[in-house]
Image (cartoon, rainbow, N blue to C red):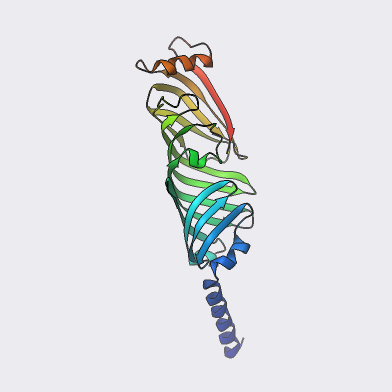
Length: 247
């Protein structure tokens, strides 16, 4: 290729990059935002911008800001750093687009109320706070292909026991699994003892939490009576519990 042709091609490439860099976010929404999601009050560009309000399905995510990683676009895996804020919490993560049907989330930090995430996880009126640090979460064609991290729920008040604080519980899912994703459930504080606590999340989002539970010696009477509905206790006072749901 002759030198003039090279310069023309280089100039065209630079012009294209310049146009993409200034691509208004409000225009890009129609191309990049998946169905079921909506953004309002959009400003900035596809590289760096914000939205005053974001909804995904019935969930109000809150205000959102994003900051692209330009080099990842050249490598074919567009990546953004996202941060969402709302009056009752926050979430921030690095999100990478993988092909046409895949997305990978890393370095996810979240802190909010259980009510805020109730549209994603079936909680049946349960109240409390949730914090999470997720190392990896990936979807391929709508199925989970990676999941690892820690979730802590505190000030837990299930429906029917609003005046009783069940304390804090923790879920740990280690990395390196391909599905189902299995982790441990432990009680950090409160009136319950948990043994053999286990969570199993299937690639389609269905999950099971089970284990053995017993009341602490100083547990409120409501807790002791409530556990009796789980069935007969073993010699150590533990009863089997099991909960199924879907993410």
